[in-house]
Length: 240
Image (cartoon, rainbow, N blue to C red; front, side, top):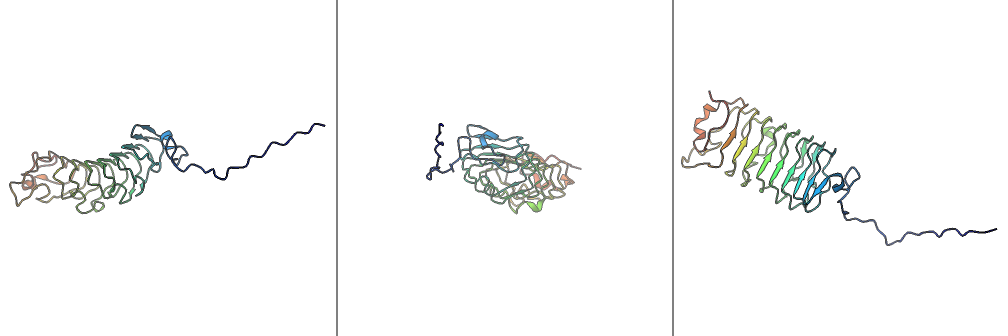
């Protein structure tokens, strides 16, 4: 009778450890795939549009532009973008966002464009001073959900789009850098004579602010004629 030897047993190497660093395609997402397999990574841009995300995936540290439109994300946590010092643009439009932690964006030193349109937000978080463009139209934003003087220190902000929300008043003070302010289709009924200008200083001119939209609000703009002397163009809205 021929006897066969049993195959030798392979004992695990006690020094072997699973890799803890992100692989070639990034860290694992909730779908069980690395970020750059689930999404499309091109250079420093990450495109995660319409891939059924419910949370923000782990992003490469070099990410500059991040797009996650048409997903099911409901919340942004304070650590979701932590350490992304080069991040310039975040587009989360057309999700189900109802909550953003207060520090989710504040500590991003390079963030210039933040697109949050078409969500369910009732409040805005604290924003970084580097911001140039904020688009939060088509949400459920209320005036009580915007901090007092929320935009005062955003000295680089040029475009502020808050149309189609539930705002009761114009969020003041507005930074002098602002060029375009869209507040149409809210619930604004009144404004202060110093909302745009300084009634105590007739020499003050706000040259940059050329685009103000207040149409679709229950406000008669003709009642506040003293409030427009410093701006290049009258607001768009109802005058009667």
